[in-house]
View (cartoon, rainbow, N blue to C red):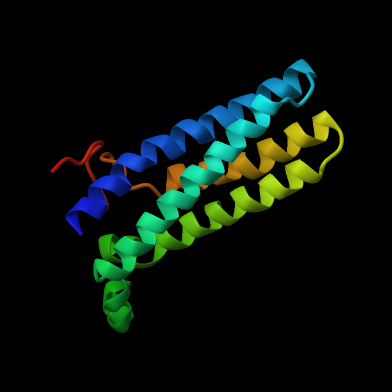
Length: 152
């Protein structure tokens, strides 16, 4: 389980990198009124793939790491901010972010005009990135703090 946690912690940087790349592409496309190119599609594709991999590792952690078993005592854990965060809030928000990335990717691909593609990218991937940033256990969050980098 420790290895999965290290991998999950490490992969978050790729998710953030590709998410920021995608949102910056969308902002640049809307402000510069440029055409939607293959590089713009690649950025959200890499964001989606990194989210998929992160979800698989995260779900493995959730079920193998015993977090799912803690739902049996949900009433007790709802009183503790750290346990509530790791048994409910983190997973719920990240799954919503994952869904938004997939829905956004489909809607961007279906759009015909470049401004619409950039606008949809900004909305869906921007909200997703915001949810990811909010539900990540950063070191400065007292109740749920985790280190910037987790090593063996």
